[in-house]
Image 1: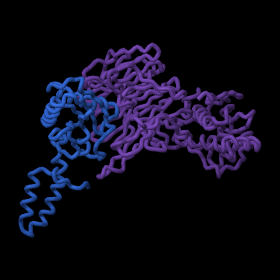
Image 2 (image 1 turned 90 degrees about the vertical axis):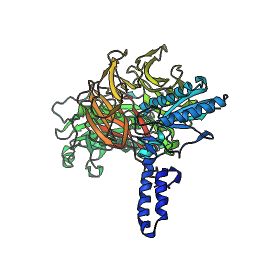
Image 3 (image 1 turned 60 degrees about the vertical axis):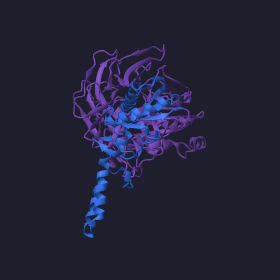
Image 4 (image 1 turned 180 degrees about the horizontal axis):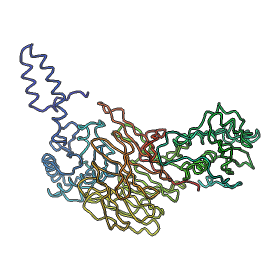
Length: 173
Length: 446
């Protein structure tokens, strides 16, 4: 198993753990069992439906401006969280009007190569369209689909796949 | 490549004999035909001269090994152990003692003779029916010595055709993508090899991502997708000259290329503003035509062998399914209706079937269906596999398979596999590196 990264545990589970640690010796054994639960909960805690909601692969265009948004299997619909991220990107791009970006669209490994190339393109364009509605000119945004060719997580499990279904805004200049 | 042209000198017309042995290839063959491949005999002088030029001790025996391996991998034949052979190769080629071959349970026998004629390689061979005690065919070839493996493949094609009644697929090549490095930063190169894995060559250096190479069915051209300068575009590569060029002038990603059956057009997808449609480009006059016009993803097009129809992959119903249309884009009909998602349709060179990849309940299948979608048959199931490509006789499919990684994300591999249309004879196709996206060539000689 991968090392547990504490910031990825949802706060509820963390508080529960802290409470238990404050309790008596007798409960310590139970605590161990529970922390095992928390470990497995981690993977579901980082996904809503099958959309990734964690942060461990996210990079930042600037402080508080995440570079990527995530998608459900076979989908290119932007989630509420994705739209929030893209609004932050748009605000940042408006402030830095000399910057151009490439939107890199990706798919997970559970699909045929050619369809995934098209799906990656569709996802990146969903992000592009949203940025444009927030005033970013289309000539500052180019789109590049990698299909399933460039996963960030090489795992073969639902969590890894959710991290790989993404559109990443990359500074082009 | 010019030196690959083989000079055929057929000196005996195939002997016509009715009621001789036959191999049925329409069913899974659980009792492969026992066949003896006698080492091709060679005189000492020829042996020495070929040893010098080809660095092979006994070229006659090397050629027979090529034939034997081909026959074995076909799954239809069981080449017998050479140690059990009683008769010497040169005598057997003149007149086999059928009782001896019968004794080791051989039903068919291949004999031959190799000779150096003016620094050319002259090979003759005979196919014998052991039970009937008759010659079934006899042929001779003369070619440049470097072509010795191809001679073995052509002999196998002739034997296969004589015994099954259908054309062989041994004198062919596979173009594929050679893979290396971690899954997150995979390095991919175009590679080409003989159908049996010999003569592997890398055609690109791996500086840019390359995907989905496909042969032109009529020439030594290949079309593929390259990320050269980070612009994913369909390219055309002449493997004789090494010259490559971008196909068309599209303001965005072009992908999923294939040739038309006459080799004169490329059909592919062009993605723009989140929508992928199918286009063709005529390679002579460079005219581009838009074939589909739909806000969904339309990709993976493949022509029927008569060029009149196109099967393709679309998610216009909400999910990936297989569709067939006329080659002008009219009469679009969905043909896949089973459970799950369907992708990568490829029309059989025989015209009667479409091979596909299917995803259902977390498993991937390679299967075939009739061109109207009926008679779906799944040939193989795995964690991940896709992209079938037909052998030129439409009897075998080659595809690639990927393994599941462990919890640490390690243990990934991608390999080529082949399987008979019957669903039997699944085999790993050896490649020097990891491999994906195979495409089978037409027969190099006919």
